[in-house]
Image (cartoon, rainbow, N blue to C red; front, side):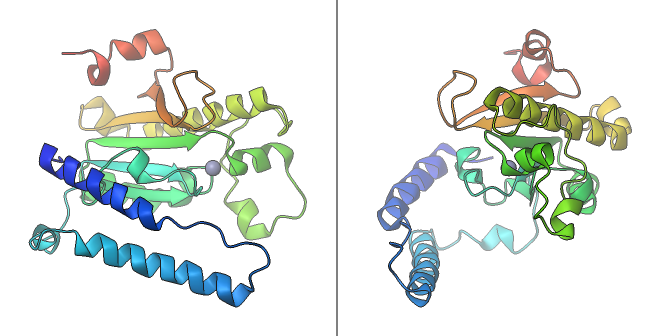
Length: 237
Ligand SMILES: [Zn+2]
């Protein structure tokens, strides 16, 4: 778990890296110039990251990993680990795919749970998820490989331009993914070795808790918020 000094240090890192944040190239730039700027941004970001680390930062990385949680998120660029863990290195066994699905990444998730023995599995969807919207509207132009990866997204309705329906579908999908994981990891959950938590990263402020908040909507299949508040992760003990 991160120490306070590390959190402060990483906060400094993030404030420093903001100085070199990538801003999309103007449209009149050539493709070659855009690629050059993008690659330069990544290399400079990596330089900045390494430059500010203490000398022994990677020593314990060499001997393996012991992440605190397995986390499944959508691959969407608006959702990244620093929004959920200020110091994600070594903390999160991260699995990403379009629509934060369990079945399309079954082996990766199983490795996190049954080999790295993380006590928590997070499944995190987000506002305005394009994968969920595609599963709703079923556009005909998508390639078969993308269709296959939308296969286990569970939505409510087909109006991807109806914001309330998209929000309900994002929730429905997270709940469905939690159910899928519960079926597979029934024993681990029953014996208290695994807690499965579903959430939505809300950058639209749909839940009126402020933009960018993580909203927990499901714990081990429980979706009643009053009941969730009484459960061990949130019961204030
Ligand atoms: Zn998404």
